[in-house]
Image 1 (tube, helix red, strand yellow):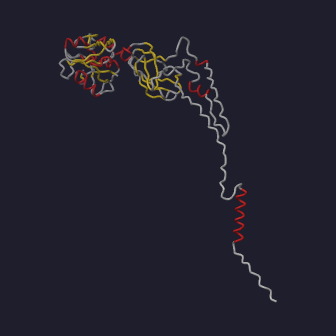
Image 2 (cartoon, rainbow, N blue to C red; image 1 turned 180 degrees about the vertical axis):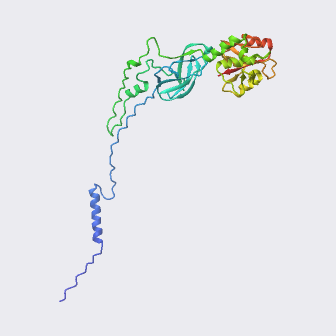
Image 3 (cartoon, rainbow, N blue to C red; image 1 turned 120 degrees about the vertical axis):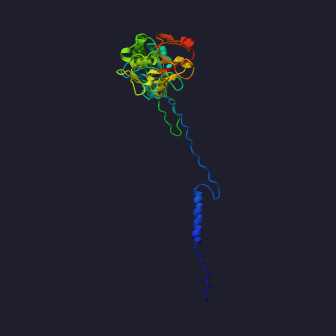
Length: 360
């Protein structure tokens, strides 16, 4: 008897793999600790503690470590100003202005270690020592180290500053370090007797001294041996002579030949001389009557008697008396021979207007 046929089982390719995959997935999720389709719990992470703020950085402060020094090494210069001087120190690049006895000097340059300055004229051309003060852009006075050495403020700040570190995550922030100011250097102690200061000593300008000495020697004793005399109109001839004594050198536009006694128009004419000075600002600059407070001994005074615009008389300033912003000016001259003639008196007698030239 024939055995009945056994049903054939057909294996579908990939079914076993699919089943394994399903098992594997199931096991994988079970291994992860949750059932299929369940949400996985979020992980908990430690939050690092906030970093401690950095300690504030102190800005360096300027300090002067030396006295005023002129090119010859001395702290002196002529009362007419114009002397170039230097001071040294630390953190001086911010120096913006300077005064000499209250008069503004000019800061030529300022570096971290050196300030170069041009001195102004002394008040009323007075001689003697005056206080010198340096200021930053905010108008704060720059301190002076009397001993000329020692620890500067910036170096002291650097020596006493602590470096802040960033704490590791989760650690407590360290307490801020305590800064202890360094002990002052013995060399930096102020000089005995008070606060340290800079001084500059004004001395007579040898050029102006020579000029006024000549003027006062020849205002009524004409130097005819060297310069002759221009009859009735010798005022510019005389003024020009004083400028030669001061150190001016002649040029093509302003000259006198002592051999032939020939001269250029600017040597003898007030109007031509004014035109010459206008063309040579390196020698003198104009000042109006309203700028009398800027006039100094050795400057040039000119009068326009008829107020026509042409200059009629010229002299050399021999004295300046100031009271506040008011100045009384006196001059020496020829034609109307005088040594200390008042400008105001001349205006009262002759009328017209007056102007000045500030001689450099």
